[in-house]
Length: 286
Image (cartoon, rainbow, N blue to C red; front, side):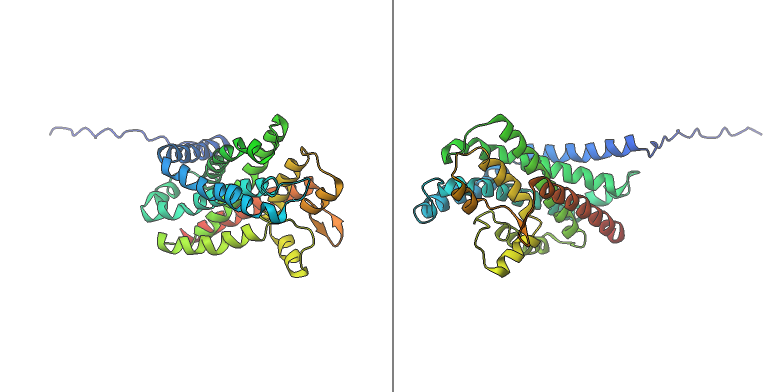
């Protein structure tokens, strides 16, 4: 009787689920976002239309009414327009997870031997990088609105914009965790992002606000991302104390002026909290 030789089985190697493996997984997701960004040139152009309209059309139209002798209204608007450009790009980067779910790519990522935290962290890093890169175009327009080029200022702005973009992208992921269809995502993004923008002080000074609006801006986490950006720009402008107090009064809690480092720390904390909530929500949903 002839002996039957068993069919050889190929060895399967499962990568060790260590920190290095999780970092590599996050880097792969980040790289995918960069590839998508590079291939979608229409997205780059369309995302710049609104900030340019705010800066040059709205800013020029209101300049004669709002500007003082020291500050052109377009100069005041510049930090807010930077924040607004990052806000919408980062939000749509986060909510794009709905497309990944609808076309099955999300499930493929979640069944891979990597943690949900690594996947969503890579997504946030990718979305924040894309939003920050696009904001560089707005930064290049700074001299046109009276903001000088300064290397230290520009580097600080890039860091602050990246932190804000990470926070908003994490918020977008949190919102997209329960959404199954793209048609449902757009209204939710508009309903969430638009109030965040208008209540952040990006388009108006935080001085002399009505009581209810002061409370709303103080509770809005976006305010703590916008104000450090504006403070960084205004630190490099030659302004009188009165003009600085009018256009950049800072954030106050019951009369106490919140330091800029604490504002940045609040943004970092919001990044971690929103990312953690998004991870927990995706773990329950998927």
